[in-house]
Image 1 (cartoon, rainbow, N blue to C red):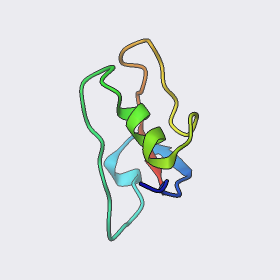
Image 2 (cartoon, rainbow, N blue to C red; image 1 turned 45 degrees about the vertical axis):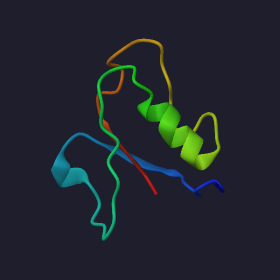
Image 3 (spheres, one colour; image 1 turned 45 degrees about the horizontal axis):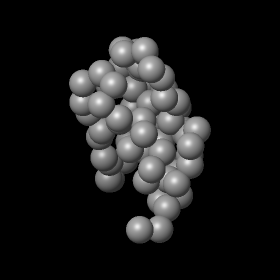
Length: 65
């Protein structure tokens, strides 16, 4: 599978802060299940989405485009 071109757009604290979009994909799951690693794999990049060994580090909604 070819990499999907992606870039970090912004972080949001509320749903009201999310940008308007026709299409979107949400990656949701429990702590430390590989959500950031999945995003990095889609983009074929290692540091696009920050990964951490500490569970529960993400406190915001991170938006990529």
